[in-house]
Length: 127
Image 1 (cartoon, helix red, strand yellow):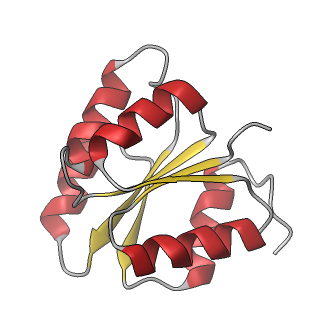
Image 2 (tube, helix red, strand yellow; image 1 turned 90 degrees about the vertical axis):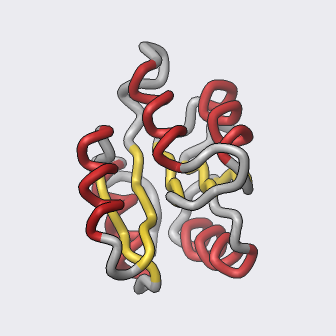
C-alpha cells in the first residue's frame, strides 16, 4: 500500500499524536525522527504529503525541504511545515523554500487534518 503521509518529527509525544490523528482520519502513515531519514523516506516511499518539523536532528526541516524542491523526482511533493508558536521567521523561510502549508505548534487536531486534506486535494480520510 502506498504511503499517504510521511511525518518527520523528533518529539515522541507530538509524533505519536500526529500519527494517531492522521491514521484515524483514514490515511496510511510512515514516521521518521530525523532529517536524513526524512529525505531517504521521501525518495524511497514517494508519499503523497510530507509533514515536516523545522527542528530535526541531523538535518533541519529547512534543509530537507530545500532538497525536496531541488530534486526533480520529489519537487511536486506537497510539504506541510510544523513551526513553533511565534516563529514568524521560520514561516517566512519555509515559504521562500517552497512549503505548501503551515501549522503552528501547539496545534488543534482538526487544523492538521484539514491542512493535510487540503494538500491531498480534499481526498482521503473519513474523519
